[in-house]
Length: 432
Length: 142
Image (cartoon, rainbow over all chains, first blue to last red; front, side):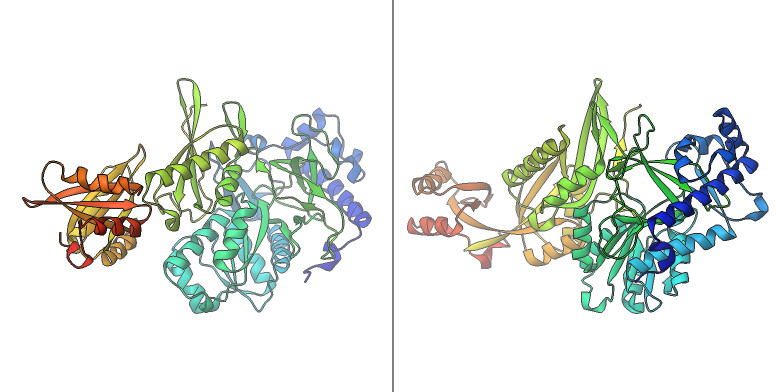
């Protein structure tokens, strides 16, 4: 099923023309309305008329997260405040939050791309969708909510947390689809087993999961425990929220809704645009956004793009699951470590659960990494040699995957804090 | 002849053991014997209690990682050389012991709880040598 065949299956040549037209209009608009961009373009000697088509996109300067912080809260808005109908913000672990605004049309466009996304997961008006993403400043809850209403599905706006209630409504209302973070989905699955709820009483068939990086192994685990098909949805607050890209049923990467969000892959060091298929930093130009259009926003997500037509009939480019967000990357004793690598190692081993915490510290000027791992109950042995053997195996697998050694600490199941939203996987105690 | 022992995974955290003993006390479950194997990060508590299945369920419900393990209880005379004689029999018959712990019950006897690779073999060997074994019926109230 395809929600909007016109845009999702457009000939690429036609799509590039459309993108060119939209970028051109957008550059003119921000030049006139956003002092920050006017100054930046003037500094580089670029006039709006220099942008004639999509090929000129690479002439434009980048926008970074720091630019958003510097212009906090409304400095990058391209419309006056009365035209704003909603704000969202991302928490931001350091400093001020990132604030974004939406006009009425922006909300319509966002609902459209989420409706396309949900349709990819097979959602129709016949479905009951439990939106267990947090509602509020975070884009997850309301983003999925509006898209699901646009599809015409019946929405349960339960938000995150209160897991017992999630399970109760899932059973009583007969939810067929759930949308939340993958870590929360894993926790709901675990609770389903713990509460001894008969899976046959649950009608769930699909899950739409995103807002944090997750591994293929985690997908398998969620699919098994919840007995559903798990779909990956991608997005970021700065661009729109969830619904920037989404997997179709063939799951060969996530289709980017390119008519609205124009993607590029660049070399993160030089800024040079890389061809399809090469690994680099993902950059977006959300050309149709009214309230806060950004020019070439650097996501810091590392991935590849593929432009071959998909089996599903869509011509939209597909992005691979991100290797990691450069924000999440830890540098430990000079080695780059992504929490997702640790997750892969743990999930490949049947004895451990996907719940873990990485604690990084510095002792005598040397970085230390401790990984706390929960032992699967059924693999608990009461012999020290067995548990120590397990610990050594985890340690060995970590070294071979990450290239650096870690202290492995086995902890009791259920003791690592479960997240109702984005999972906290890292505690960095170093004062860097 | 096989006895049910409760094994619990405990993180090295202040108060965690007290929490466990509190739960057993509240539920009127008596501990007849126990030992703790400790490592830097965690310990494994092994104990013989009255009503082991019930105790395991209660502890699981409270979030403990619990396992019921089969062990053998060997009764030996409480006097010099008592343990040595028993161990000699076991080692002469090439039975590998994983772990053991003991407690004296009264003036004349002591009980040794043994976990071995092959419990059936150890039972056969000990019975062949007329060693007294704890029976399931009387064991949980040692």
